[in-house]
Amino acid sequence: MAKDFTPYQQKIIKNYYENKHPLHLQKLAEMVTELFLSEGKKREKVWEKVCQSMKVLGVPESRIQHLKKQDNPELVAQLVKELNSN
Image 1 (cartoon, rainbow, N blue to C red):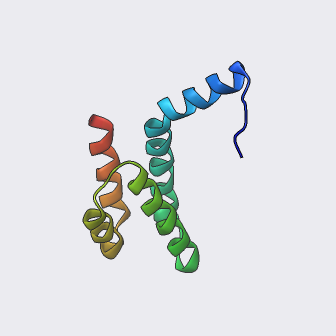
Image 2: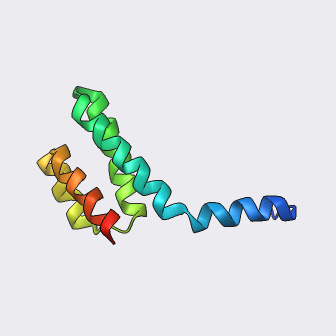
C-alpha cells in the first residue's frame, strides 16, 4: 500500500538512507565490543547481527563466512578499521 509522506517525513527518510553506511559501520563497531564480552548463545546471536551489518556494508559473503568461522573479534575490529579508512 503506497503511503504519502509529508515533506518533513520525506526529508527524514532521505537523510536516513544518505547516512545508512556510517550508521551500520558504527553499529558494527559497537558489536565488536559485544563479541569480546559475550559467550555461548548470546555470542551466536551477536555474530548473526554482525553478519547482517557486514552484508549491508557490502562485505563479500566469503569474507563474512571466514570471519565468522575464525570467531575472532579482533579480525572484525580490523575490518571496521579498514572500512573507516575508505
